[in-house]
Length: 164
Image 1 (cartoon, rainbow, N blue to C red):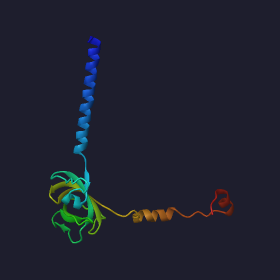
Image 2 (cartoon, rainbow, N blue to C red):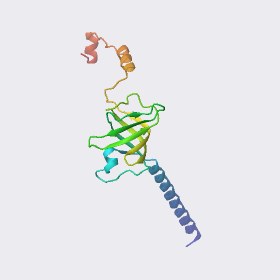
Image 3 (spheres, helix red, strand yellow):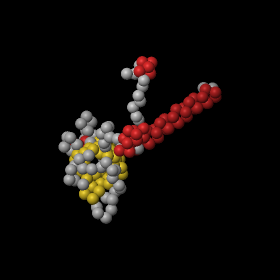
Image 4 (cartoon, one colour):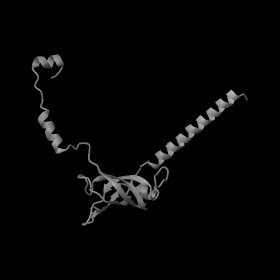
């Protein structure tokens, strides 16, 4: 093999090796920052299609309804503990050490993100309260009512613009 071809081959092999190393580091970083979504039943029994269960120490998101009568607050701190259940009957305990969202209440849908600390127990770092798509803050509704008045078109304007 002549020196020119040898140099090109070495460069090509080094380039392919570098791309492979970068791709593997990228996949590793994405995998370690991945937050998988589970329902309480899937945490307890595993996912239906794959049987995959989250591991202790894994960062996950869980969604469900806050079980009525399950919330326990520590009077001396922000620590709160509550149960989250789903329609299939699974239930897990969520602990949280920060201010809860204003829309949080028992019987309300939530999504909690955190680390699975024990089987069926999540130490949440973030709690999001769900609301329906029709929700509108009172301030926004009031502002829209004041600034969005119905326009009155004359008959000529209506005909020209196609409005009735």
